[in-house]
Length: 217
Image 1 (cartoon, rainbow, N blue to C red):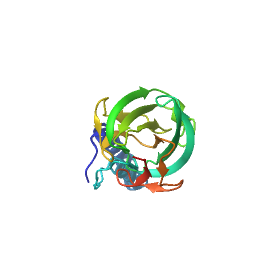
Image 2: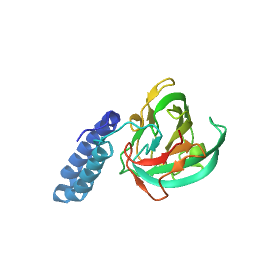
Image 3: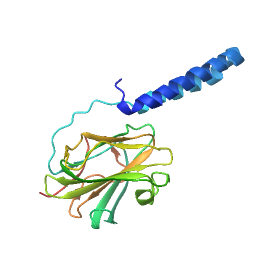
Image 4: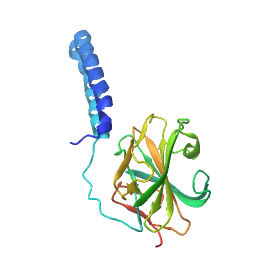
């Protein structure tokens, strides 16, 4: 199984913790140590599972908006995006549980025209105010259809580290990685009002593959 580059520090700490706790459990509890060792090994395995990098067949897109993450669509609504667009937009929010792949991908192809990191709170990721109050990043892309699309990585109650690798002027390719969030979190995508939304609340998404909307050319 291929692991994401962001896994190195976490896996090192987890390995040391498992080794120390496992040794102490065997030393002091002997046969009863299995009560601790089995759950400990399951948790250790979940750390590897969280940082997995699945193989995805990424194709080129122009008008299609691609799911930026694996997760569940929890919100589709008209909002006022006041950080960059300064106008009304359709917000599509996807929640990621700790068991989902947490690679963050560009939802559209084009050019990165804005990026900003915001420190903040750690409300649960499905909370509506997490979009404006939590630790987050905001990225805007000028799409190939000449639309401005904003998307936002949002830290959740558990997630405490957001990573994004893009810079202004970079070329964005729909479905390709631009960042990573550790543990439970959320991604918001802000689209033009005339965008055709092809997903619905409750849909499970596969990042880089599923089409969640189509923009007019």
